Image (cartoon, rainbow, N blue to C red; front, side, top):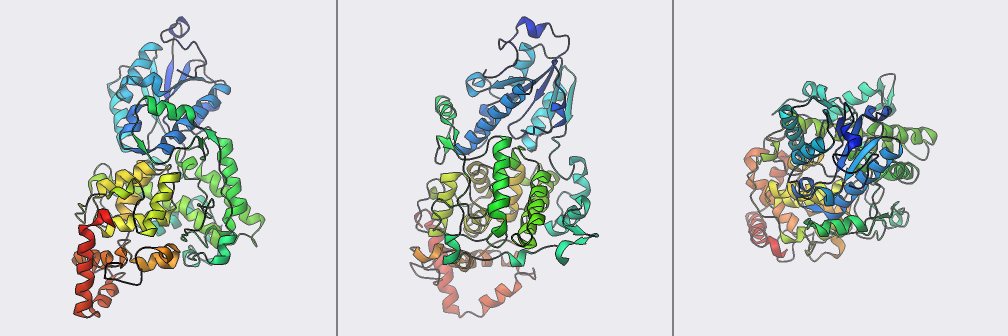
Length: 533
């Protein structure tokens, strides 16, 4: 037990003498210092923050992800204690004997003579069910409270999202803009349009590369956590860092937000879809990398949005509305939208496999060892930093998984494990829905499948690739090209009626028989040797 404001010996007299003691559980993604729980110091209230094998083992995680959460939890426990709250912070050394969260709670409740139990509503279905079941069976008063984080209240989700019903982000985003009066002029969208996405699709040219800023990286000592993970044989993957680069405190998260608004936001929208292999230490381009701080609730989404808007208002010549709107849309629109899709369709969403994809995840997802340059770069960055931006995740890695017909269960588990910001409520709809179309269009109006031409247009990955993006068949042809057509034809009956993709099939029919046969034969060859690509 590493932190407590009282005698750290379970069952000590000082604990037993309390007539009434409430235990409040704080999960690793509930590090919200502004929560109403903390407005008053209550000597009869104990906060529990605990590392637990249950949470390191439900999927195989990137080592940096585990370190980031454990260090942020430790820092939050210290901050609460410094503010005068009673805190129990337990590490794996303290909880190794506990097989799950209920067992740990039983022990703490007994050791500290707890008379009431409270918890913030988890944002993952499995944890919500676990804690609600536990609380219902507990022979103590219990209470579930809101996390006070999201911009659409939990109780209003059923009004916006219906189970098994297709929803579209753009309409939801506009309603949220109006609801929160964000980027509006007299009720109308600022700049005369709701969405500037068409202006935000530039690739990086040679001159642009020289102007890429260095990312703001932190140096949080992770050695003790790494030793603890090894001591308890926690199975992780990815590259470990003795000095963790991710923000773990509110102060660091605010620094990262300030840095984004000052140095990155002016070009964020323009290059938000761009990719390059020539970044060196500037691997995150103009992306904020605030997603871990947001998803751990260290930062509040309105705090982030307001800061970005203030930067735009202070210097609209340097930061155009198109740059700002693209950023606001990600947080106010997309982030809140995928949460709604998640809760409307759970449980069950995690079993959807509309395209009946059954393929095995190739081994290079764990080491980046592939001759496909785009995948080597995107997977390699993911393994090195526990991070890739949304186009790398969607249109490179996810696109490959989609057109190769890989099992969405395996794809989900990889995405949930590899990224530092991945929590199921945000990962699952993005992966199984947006990326893999396994929900048959509940989230997206079409499958986000693409050939190598898209990657060539938005990146320089193809220039030094073993494969030739200009070729659709042959031993050196880009696998994305033939796999794309094989995928589109496998699912022609499902997709052809969609006006957004009907023209694709007309283009296919214009090809001569020999060309079509060569492409499909090449795709079948590649599918038979995915491990060797």
